[in-house]
Amino acid sequence: MSSATFIMHFPDFDAQEFLREYWQKKPLLIRNPWAEWHNPVEPDELAGLACEEGVESRLVTGGAALTLEHGPLQDDRFSALGTAPWTLLVQAADHHIPAVADLIEPFRFIPNWRIDDVMVSYATDQGGVGAHFDQYDVFLIQGLGRRRWELGDPCNEQTALLPHEDLRLLAEFEPREEWVLEPGDILYVPPGIAHRGTAIGDDCMTYSVGFRAPSRRELIEEWTEDLLGELSEDDRFGDPDLEMQPNPGEIQAQTLARLHQMVAERLNDKDRFARWFGTYATAPKPSAVDWRPEHSIGPEEVSIALRSGAPLVRNPASRFAFVRQESESLLLYVDGEAIECSGEVAVFAQTLCASPLVETTLSIATTQPTRDLIWSLVNRGCIAFEEPED
Image 1 (cartoon, rainbow, N blue to C red):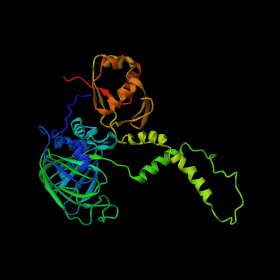
Image 2: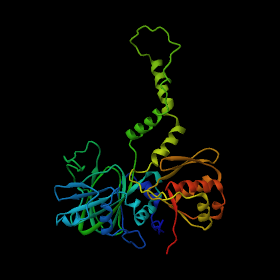
Image 3: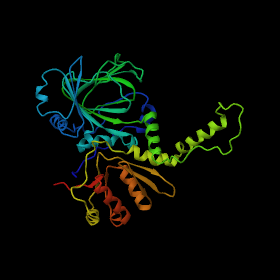
Image 4: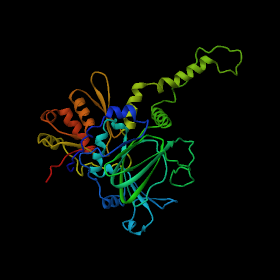
């Protein structure tokens, strides 16, 4: 895999203060915090990505009345758009472009499992996707050009929407705050806050670093579905101590308590839930980029690469997390699979989860269990050895 230069964390940014005062509470404008801002993707490169199979892209056209078109787009689609405002949206651009993946690094003070992806938008003058709200946290980084952001009131599922087949647009929107973002500026928007972004001039590019949060409904649905796979039809309610009751129509309190306990003891299994949640939280997107080598790499090739000091780089589309166990062991979760780790392997697993780039050492190269883990993850396409620069 090609070499990447990772963007350092913001100087003079107090992450603790941000989490305490702003995270999921109120918006925050951060004027260009970078030592030197460079727009990671040229508009033509983004347009080319939107034309590729397996890349989720959308094209929003029009002014007052917006229409949505799903990709992949044809190569000549953009030349036929004319002068009306339009916006191109490319989801998970960080999976395809290392420089876009770098934009996530300053936000690593938020746990990995909360990271969704980086969506990149390009808009012509007055282009936008209308007033709307999202159920996730987002950092909006202005990459190129200028964009006006208007923020309104908190919204929820009762908030009125316009009738539209494809877009969730607010029926009413009253701006409460307004900012114009220049290249390098960042606007944090908490979940549920109404907002509208409008390009000021052509060549307006915005990078949306999004953080997901599962709904209670989704958690219950997915967790119970997973549990059902291991429950037996023979595991049934029993009442060998049944006694006569005054009215056969009554469901007595002790019966309800026993039935409830029958369900709750499985749902309340914390260890089982932790094991499941790790696989659920790290499950890759269907469109995840495949980094599996064309030909399977053998253990000796891995050993040679490690002894040479070649760094390991994570696939941007892969998700890594871990859950601590007893006796200094842990469960490493990679792309929806759990791996038991202990001792030196557990130490390496934590390093792998902490950074997208891992410098290898001689101790790693000579530890067989760690080499085996690396060998497995390389062949699964979750990590790769960084290729030296020409």
